[in-house]
Image (cartoon, helix red, strand yellow):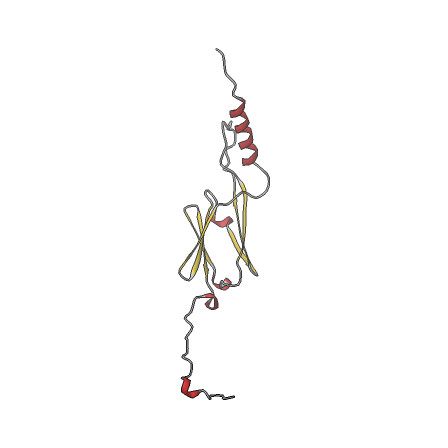
Length: 143
């Protein structure tokens, strides 16, 4: 029985293996949008223990850390192992327009939600326009 070898699929598999198991923090995909007077950040962290999720604010820097540990399967022979384990890390610069004291976070079904309120001074506001004085009130200068 003859077997064919496809060098491109083998190269694709090896490249995927190298990128998938690279050292250092893993990529954490996020969505970020503004809804009314707050920003909402949603981060995908499937399979992460909620106790390992850490959200910190230091000055204007928001840092999200999490860790996904491998399930213990002693004595098994792995055929494929594609779900990544390890540390996750993302950092965001907040700027001056948010109220960092009121940031809150929750974790549900593998998604971390971080609510970042807009500060009062950064909220849009109406500026009153005052009418100028009538022309009668101005003194006339003759030359």
